[in-house]
Length: 120
View 1 (cartoon, rainbow, N blue to C red):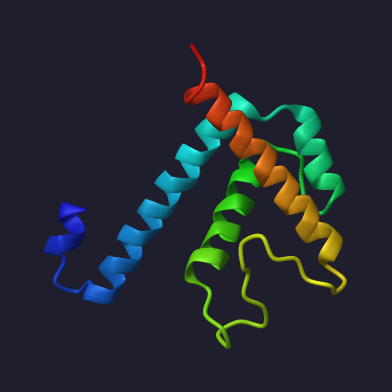
View 2: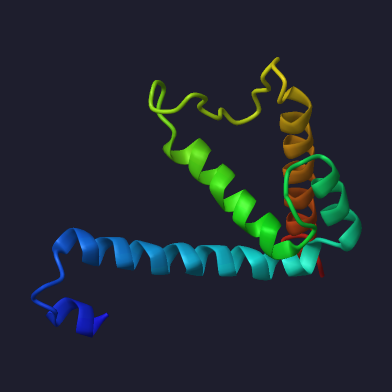
């Protein structure tokens, strides 16, 4: 990053994009580490079957959770075709997938709480 800061040809916006890319990789990597502790192959196969992920791996699930989180946290009405609202379910073709997302995230959250909050 020091080399980027001293590069006179690198515009500020480009530097910011490079730093954000590193930050995103760190977030996804951290999420992947958490998932390694609480997800099993059955969960991954189920997520793939529900079209939540394309391939049944923890890396794929980590990327999709990160993207979903961003859709919820940064979505603005009118900005996208659809803004995700936590705990809301659509009544269109994606309703079953959204309910599957909700159930999966709820299950993972409960496991994480049990493992790191309530474990002795």
